[in-house]
Length: 101
Image (cartoon, rainbow, N blue to C red; front, side, top):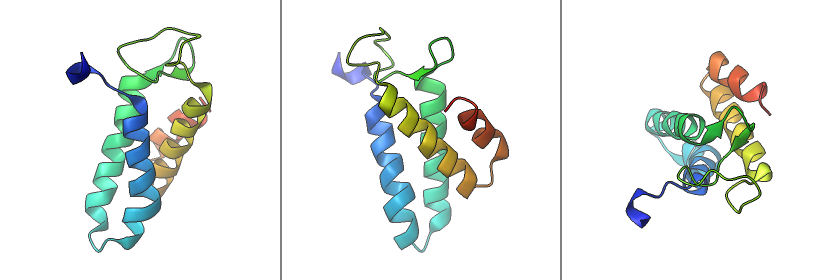
């Protein structure tokens, strides 16, 4: 059902917008920093699969060779997690993403 579907791109697109656009335009950067961290951790905790070294496109459908196993977006997620971690000086999160990229 649509109400329980969790898509990786919904998180990634928001992180992209917050990190690249809104953070630089906002006077309340702490709000955006907190949201960026929430999104980065959601990607890490809900979509990353250590066994297959992939970010699943949908956390409810984890099948290789499907539309939900996109290695390009996996790398983009790890890159944005690294950029977020670097911006927030979160060495542990940066190291986590870097070692998997």
